Length: 133
Image (cartoon, rainbow, N blue to C red; front, side, top):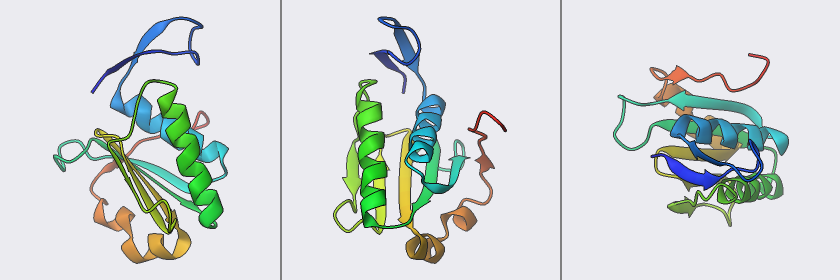
């Protein structure tokens, strides 16, 4: 999926495309800005037909997880990208945001440990997303 959008973060007034890898990185950076922890991007292309990238991170409480989800939604919306579905927002133990080629999982510590998606997707390559990596 490539999205044609006005992109104020790159060139004012310019038109750019953003690919799924860039969307995943944008989600990770946005979560990081909202103080999410243990942020990973898994490249699952070729391992599943469901999506290309998984973004997984943790928050400390319900309010922070909802804040991270809302900020990701707003940031992607500014690029013209809208989620296909969202689950778990009200309970905020595990929020799943489905953007098609990118799925974002926001966990509280207990649920992340219980579901252990890092083990489930252990064969997937981790995508470096921080500028210092």
